[in-house]
Image (tube, rainbow, N blue to C red; front, side, top):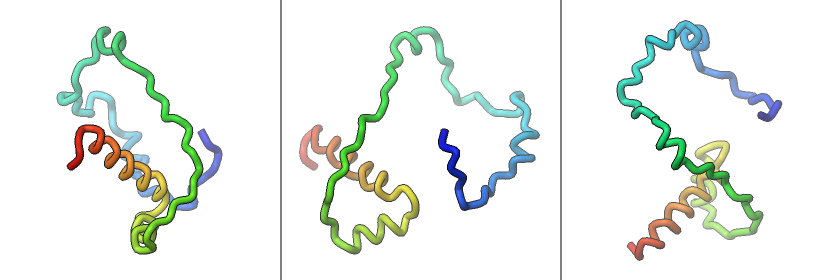
Length: 91
């Protein structure tokens, strides 16, 4: 994990989090994981990203930037969603 510290202060109430016991957590909606799940599970690591130059309309870029840190990752996610939808046939 990176040793870099965020400049933003956490709004998490850590005293409240620390005060929650395991028995207080509602796990009723969590599906049980048996051995077959782990036998069929695959470790999927993200591939290395390629650095490119792309031209975007200024309003599109500004909107993504206004969403805060991680805007390039969000642009990638939108492009990936579009790509996946097109693999299954044009919209």
